[in-house]
Image (cartoon, rainbow, N blue to C red; front, side, top):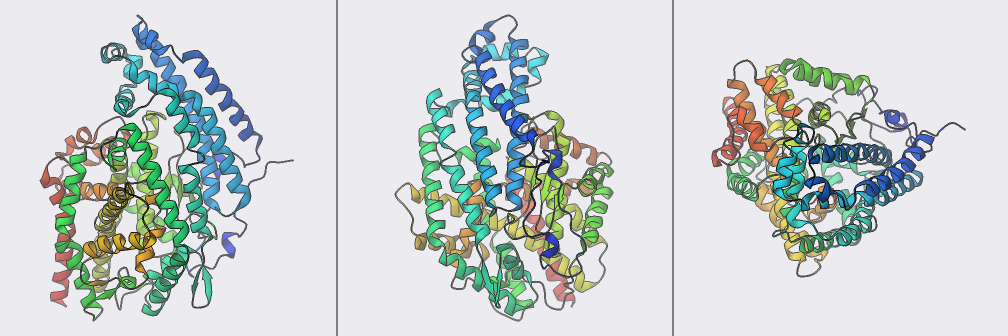
Length: 614
């Protein structure tokens, strides 16, 4: 019997979508495995069990002796190389399971497959836990001597990053307990959140919609449709406050327990460590953005309210298209060409890599019931290639999302030669590539636009994207901080979570945005709060960095593109300070953040000038 290749039970062609988009691509996961029933999946799961156990048999309890030997560099390098190979195998399996699951998170066969693979990978990888723990216990002098050997020196960036975890690692059996119980703790709550979100339905004008089409209506030209969508979102979110409140409370407590055992001094310390960014830099970013609220978001929304002939905009009008502006859906082929041409004008290599995603079926674009909401570029493993998930509906923001995710994809392809251990990039730098891709596309569109109304709409759209990336994400970060800090003193009620949410949103968006009843429940659908606590500031970091980086590009002589691609190709082998040095940028300088924020303020200046010229 041939292996089964699962697809969403409802085919993309059967889903009603905006007219004029043209055929939308669906990815082909066969580059990973032919299907969930494929014998290759069972073979690799069995192989993972065997190789993980064999690795522990070969090295557990022996690293200290190896490090003290005359052949330390060579011996440790061989061990890390073998560990890296297993990491690639495990990564391929869990990536495939995750992508299959994301196609339809409500399908029982997929959810079972995803859960079963998670359990098998967790059990197999428990044999590997000892490796980094023992490696971190080796004396610094011995590690320094061993990494002088070129074979081990190759892995120096990974070793140095791993050893930064040393102050927070626990006794081996406790680490094993944390690892094994992750399947029944935070990963299960993540899965519950995903399946709950995917299963929600929103009643809009007599139609039952999933979350993505409903959120999409918040950008509809019709105010009545935007209001109906917002009220439908509020109604369904409020009806499901109990599970969402329990999920967030449980995960916050779970994190607090882990942080306390590990000795992290702050609720966000673990994220800063994984991002390889100093806490004081994040604090400087947050303070700079909060100080800029009046001259960025407050000023822009007051201007937008004026365009709509109002003193204040309801929250459902925040991302509304401008009045009297063409809002035709952007066909998929046009979106592809616009992004590829923008990439190609900057660096032909970027366009060539991005073009592979279209030509080789690495993108899944249609909206489908049960499909994971939002968008992502999954790097999978260096021995394969990334996959991009979108929910493309032809909005200008969807075009920018395509440019954003392809920026990630290009970055992941360029970094892959560093191998499974050193290809991954800290989130702060990962978001740089995606936001830079957006900026290239925006600048290209702006240069090609001469009509005043269209130019105004394009500028306004970019400002809104930047506000969503910088202001909104820092507000999210503030929300998370307050929630996690208060959670230390006991559970937070749904009412209290709503109060915190309204407080931070009101402060960040300003007086020109009216947060209508029901908006207090909108914290429920933000996946980052569940999947990656404190991830959100990486977006603001990346946007401000890109603004500064693009300013350098506009003034740079030949060679900038080459330096930029080299930065992406470094993957996780260099600290942000080292990567930014060739561009004359330093995130430790207060002027760095102010420069990035000034770019947003400058675009608002241009909008005000257009308004005066009207």
